[in-house]
Amino acid sequence: MIDDRLDKEYEDLRVTVRDFATSEVAPVIGDFYEREQFPYDIVRRMGEMGLFGLPFSEEYGGMGGDYFALCLTLEELARVDSSVAITLEAGVSLGAMPIYRFGTEEQKQRWLPALCEGRALGAFGLTEPGGGSDASATRTTARLEDGEWVLNGSKSFITNSGTDITSLVTATAVTGRTPDGRKEISAIIVPSGTPGFTVQPQYSKVGWNASDTHGLTFDDCRVPEENLLGERGRGYAQFLSILDEGRVAIAALSVGLAQGCVDESLRYVKEREAFGRRIGEYQAIQFKIADMELRAHTARLAYYNAAAKMLRGERFKKEAAIAKLVASNAAMDNARDATQIFGGYGFMNEYPVGRFYRDAKILEVGEGTSEVQRMLIARELGVAD
Image (cartoon, rainbow, N blue to C red; front, side):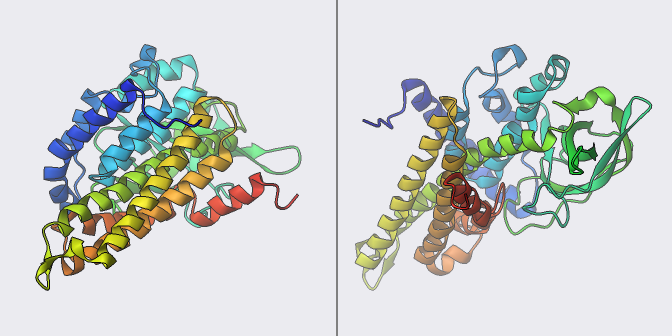
C-alpha cells in the first residue's frame, strides 16, 4: 500500500519552514513585492536555517538531506509567497546542483560552501532570446583561445543572476560541432564580475516581483579553461537532467501556491458576509473551495510520486512532467478561483490572492511550458514510436 505520511524528520522540517514563512515572510513580503525589491534579509535567514544546503552533502557545507526535503520546503514557502520560493528553488536546483552533479572536486570546494550557506547565489544560463522552449537552439558560443574560453552571446529570463550576492552563472554555449554536424553544447562557469559579462537591467514582470530576473550578455568574455563544467559537449544533456529534477521542485512550489489560495479563501469566507450570511454558507462557494482543495491534493500526490521515484534512482522523466503539468494547472486554476471568491478585494494588492494570481501564470511557462510537458509525457509513452 502507498503511504504518503511524512517521516518525523520531514514533518519537523515542514513545520519549521511553515512557522518561518508565516512569522517572518508573510508580514513583510508584500512591501518587497510592490517595490520590486529583492528580500536580502529573508534570503540571509533562509541561509542560516540551512535551506539552501538541504540536498547537499555536509562535506560541501550542506545539510545532508535530499531533494524531497527541498520540495517540502518550497511548498511551505510558496503557500505564503512565490518570489521567496523561486529564489530558493533556482538557487539550489539551478545554481548549485549543476556544480554538485557535474563539477570537479576543485569546483565543488570553491563554489558550493557559500552556495549551500546562502551567502552566495548561483544562476543557470540556458534560455536565449528567440530560443524559448527550444533549448537546443543555443547561439551563445565559446571558443578555446590560449587556455581560456571566450564567450559571446546572450541569455534571457535568468533568475538570481543580478543580486549583490550572485557569485556565478553557469552558461550553455556552442563549443564546436559533432562529427555528424550537430552543435556541441557545453556548460561553462562564469563568475560574476568577469570582464565582458554584463547583467542587463531587471525585467519589469507581471509576477514574482520580489525575485531577481535579468538578461545576460557575453562580449568576448574570458574565463579559464578549467571553468568547463562536466564533460565537453555534454552541457545540453546535463542541463536536461537538471531540468527533470527542477520540474519536481516547480511542481512542489505550484502546490504551495495552490494550497495558499485555499488557506486564504477559507479565512475570507468565514468572515465576509453577503445578503445577511457568511459567504462560506453558500453552496456555490463551498463547491469552489472543494475543487480548489481537490486540485492541491491531487497535485501534491503527483509530485510526491515523482520525488519518490527520483530518490529511488528510477527513471522519473514522465512523472516529473506529469507533476509539473498538474501542479501548475492547479496553481493557475486555484488563483483564479480565489480571486473570484474575494471579488473586488481579490484585485487589490493588499490581499495575498492578488499576488498569487500574478505569480501563478509563469508556473505554466517556466522550466518547460505545459505544451512541452505534454510532449514529454507522450514521448515517454512511446506515442510516436
